[in-house]
Length: 171
Image 1 (cartoon, one colour):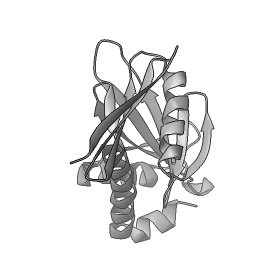
Image 2 (cartoon, rainbow, N blue to C red):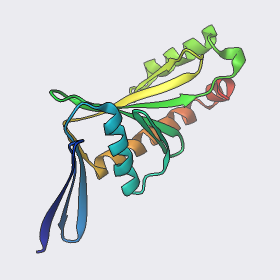
Image 3 (cartoon, rainbow, N blue to C red):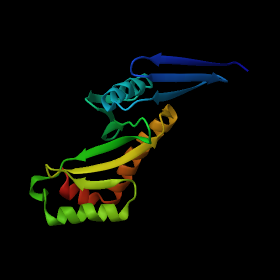
Image 4 (cartoon, rainbow, N blue to C red):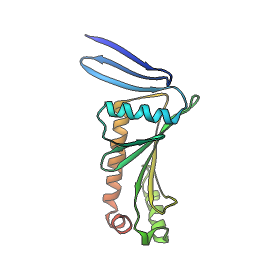
């Protein structure tokens, strides 16, 4: 059995990519020790890109991956606690429904019916879905890619189950 480990440390950001090979399979972990959210987003972008994720854009403190939806990933790092990646997916709302009572009832109904995350109306009157991926200093490619796919599929299922309302309210 062939087995080796490799550790690459990028200083000063204290980011490490750990790869181990066993029976020809590669397992990669993203390891971040620190609390610099913007640096974590840059390093997360590199990690995702190195694993073939479809990076749509990247900015200060966030990475946007493209699946069916543009999924915004914003690392929130903590040196002494639970780390997380906050996820947002934005849905444009038709102008006539922005801030309307019927649209707000629709958002409340989504939140009452599904526990995948939370829907809310932002300051512009558009709808946002948010959820979180929590971890302690590191995660594997398999974990983050499964989470991104889960967000995408959960939203597809919610939209499919509420086709009429989504077509009525959203652009």
